[in-house]
Image (cartoon, rainbow, N blue to C red):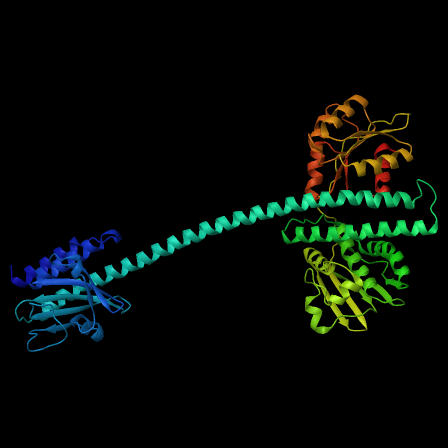
Length: 555
């Protein structure tokens, strides 16, 4: 076998022995430099990594102390290779001084470690103690192994960067998970806070509005004009506070994605006329001419009737509020095309400056602080209008001129086809009425509500039994067999849901009406599942109470 064949066989053995894994880079590079030393007969070979104006020895064919593995690049022969980017051979450093050579060495072969992309990572350096000239074959053999070393280092660095990215991603994922948990807890706490505050605020509002309504209807006796005016003021103030509370709760539900539309076929013309009737008294008080133009054949809209009513009432009341005495507010509805309907509310009020139009739908924004003092309001009405219209797949546009008035135009998609999934709700049948005055069990722990409802119901000729906690309601219902039960949901000891479940085992047909401060769509299903026949939302109005009794006692 020739010397050349022997060397090629040796190179093949070295290449075959290179089994690189990310975890043993040093062993891999040591195999490389040892193979170079054997193939081209060097006294010392090293692999260097060059970073931050220093080079670090990653592998050596001879053992070294750790203190000797980091060197300054400035003036070194390694730096010469980095600057050139090509292989450098010095046969005799005494004749060819080129950078600092390690002491005791006379000849040098340096090969840059280049990645496939051409980036120089470091060098493979081979030293001879005596002057020496490497053959072209020697250089080629060393360059083959240097190329393998460059790929190994590049892969290792890519692996390390990937590991770092994975660690950072894991840390960010954990932080994001914790942040999401915090957000979920915050959302749950907000929902609980809203439910609690709704209960705490709506309950006294029930007493305020309810008692004012009882007095206005002169249940306790006739009122003189001054007293009647005062009672109306109390009732209107309570209704105003309730409207603001409802706006705040509705906006919160929309922002959190918890407001679901209860869609049905809505006759827009009839709905608008009912809204106009509700604000007629307010318009008359401000001497505002209220008019409308609604085609008799106006199409029906597929939407949530309660929410659409809320939209129209907000716009019409807003128009009346910002229109001076003697002004006009008009409502016009028309089919825009084959798929949409338009409703416009126009006033001759104070108008909105062009620069402020972009802010009209922002929550809690009053465009002029003096307006807040003069007209009042929380700045939520138009925000709710826009959000609710968007939920219906529609849009709101506004045109306004200061001193001339404003026009708010709502565009809604409509459909004449029935809404799928509408089925009559199944409730327990009412049992036959007794001949004596009906007995109504009132399960309520708030004294003001008990006083209001007891007085009103007794004035209407009903007998009333009172339970101030859930267990008492169960006992009284079982013992006295009432004709109808009003059950507050948030009762002490046993809540209204559990009390109703237990009562149902004894009184399967007795109407049980849930009284709740915050009635959501999912609550109705929960109440029906517990055995309730129907539900009322606080604050209670005596008219609603009477209608509910009439409905379930078949009076």
